Image (cartoon, rainbow, N blue to C red):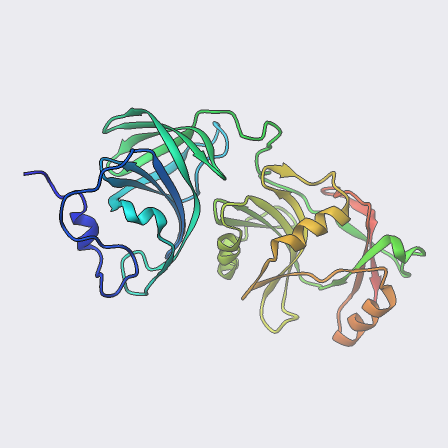
Length: 330
């Protein structure tokens, strides 16, 4: 008798409680063995599920940091139970208390070609809207596999995420700049300078001296979930001005495989604002072009140390006291 390949899947799910497809026992459907889906799964820990159609089921791996973008970055892929083919179209909320509870989104899907398929090695070519290229999965121990990108990066100019960035510092001045129209004005929060390195949904935090402070701010783990698969380096301050410790983000130094140090402040802010970063313990800092007097008045009313005038055309100069940023009293 042929083993029921979906038995483990059914045993873990209650069709009366979960919106996931739970097909009845019976013959498996037939298909072209060429469909793949990648689902972003906001479970207890964010991860991505890679599923490949094979012999009537979706053979599945949980990839904690998402598929690697370059051949230099091998990533863990944990083999999980086979899923029904209907799961390729599933997106929704798995209720609390159920296996895999949390939100499931379809991150990418498309067709694939099989180059090799054994119990220990799977080599495929993916053709999706967000992921395309040759990948190989190889078993290391038990359910643990590694996934490796065989092709060069999709973007030849892609750079690795920086491991350490010394923050750019403002220079103190007693007066605002004479050309406010060429500057953006932000509040000086008087908090702790913190840089956030986000990759594969995971967050690492360092202070102004480069010391790792990730464990001091567990509430910022959700920042990685909000960015999802988009790698980024953020600059900001942790402040108590909102009544609770809040990470106020005021600069974007790296995004989607590209360092932004050489981009003007105006462009970096545009990209930062486009990310829409806001959550229970973080927010994007407000920025006001040319409005020095109004921003300074609000800073005084709130008891803030002052404002920072940032030249709109200025680059980010790591580790420097730059005249392009001026800290002015309120």
